[in-house]
Image 1 (spheres, rainbow, N blue to C red):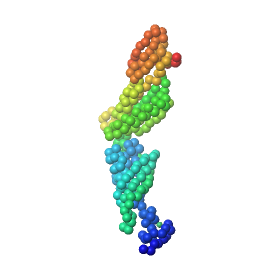
Image 2 (image 1 turned 135 degrees about the horizontal axis):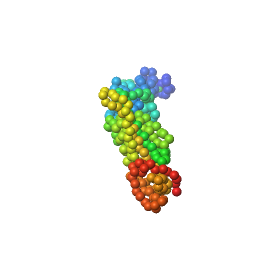
Image 3 (image 1 turned 60 degrees about the vertical axis):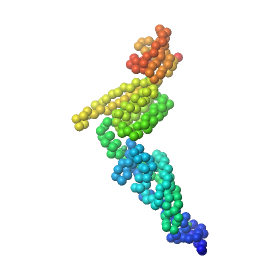
Image 4 (image 1 turned 90 degrees about the horizontal axis):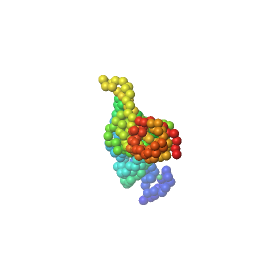
Length: 289
Ligand SMILES: [Zn+2]
Ligand SMILES: [Zn+2]
């Protein structure tokens, strides 16, 4: 067979397909083309809007969700063999391997493509409904007498993250905002149940107490609506702190999640009291020995 030059890349090849070599043809007609590179995503639960419905990865699995995204937003000529998914910021990066052929004269083969979608933030129907019920709640985590340091805040975020992972299949609400405050963190949730649950989980990890407050914010459908706040007060005393408790100077010896051991500087006696007792006696930190 006479060999010919490809007018596009200049290579000498056996045959031309529609005026170009196989490689140039494959490059010009990829097995996957994206029609629309944007995806509407719920900023609270991560659901993606596809074919008029909000689809959640936790229900379908990530691979199935990505397949549905490709089915709606792209044209695939062939069989999707493998998909690697990476989410960075508001971008969804896909590494897709498709097996197929762009032309009957080209033998079928597996070809890899990099595809990128950008997310546009929105709020899905479920989250919109949850927000409209105004059952949002606030979880405040605070330190006393010292504010929470960065290491403590980091640990709290880890606990919250682990807990959300455990709860991912339950419809218990979402975190709508997290604010770093000077001596603690504020976590806003779309349900009082989630805020309460997280409050108890954090409470179990630290010497602390939970203070619950309900603020009446009106009536809807004959039902009183409350805005709940759960405050987790974490004790940040250190061994060697000098405190005044009920008028007596004491030094802190040790602290665990339930008790604090104190040494009375005046009576030279040791005592163990609960974290709750300590907090209700409103101790005053006056120094560290
Ligand atoms: Zn060529
Ligand atoms: Zn949502």
